[in-house]
Image (cartoon, rainbow, N blue to C red; front, side):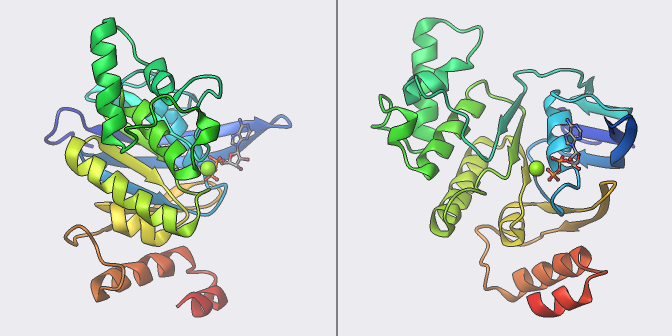
Length: 261
Ligand SMILES: Nc1ncnc2c1ncn2[C@@H]1O[C@H](COP(=O)(O)OP(=O)(O)O)[C@@H](O)[C@H]1O
Ligand SMILES: [Mg+2]
């Protein structure tokens, strides 16, 4: 696959991953090929267990793989690095540190005064000004995820990996956070890769929606979302894309498809 424009493209070529369970190799990802352009917003949907988190962890450098190559800006990914940030479903903030100190925790190679400035900028970016001295338990779920996003962006990563970041939030907070991540992406233009169970969320945010199949996880289809932002879930083109993804998802499950649509 040829690397095109954008020096910080993420390129995944012929990636396969298996885990050994009870002395047997279980294929989790098989022959994944995906090129993500610098500044692109990619959504990934797929059934539970199809390898979405494993794929993000491979990009983060947290999990090794059996075959293939993964490069960011032409450099092979072999270990974690500050050029990639990750947000999980749980905020994973340290309970004994304030929000300010949690955001500052992962900052490397930076003077004390610069650190203060960068932390304040990122707390503003996620709309948490006034809560710098609060502790994680004093925040709502949505606010804690904002803090987690600030922490993941503080080192100015080239790629932000979002693993079902709004999965534990209530429906209204979730919609609010989708708007927030859109605002942050439009401001920062960090490449974002979002794993979600929520097809509307995937369409609302993504330039493209990657639909994965299960066991082993492969890319079934990549659906482009060529709609202007902010997107309207009630728009007929939005509905058309939703139907296309659901159809892709439930091809072999006609009863469920009838139910959903
Ligand atoms: N460390 C591990 N050891 C063995 N199996 C694993 C490990 N991590 C994940 N798996 C298995 O790999 C498959 C994909 O997991 P995961 O990437 O978490 O899926 P998803 O995020 O799509 O739900 C699952 O069947 C899971 O049980
Ligand atoms: Mg997962």
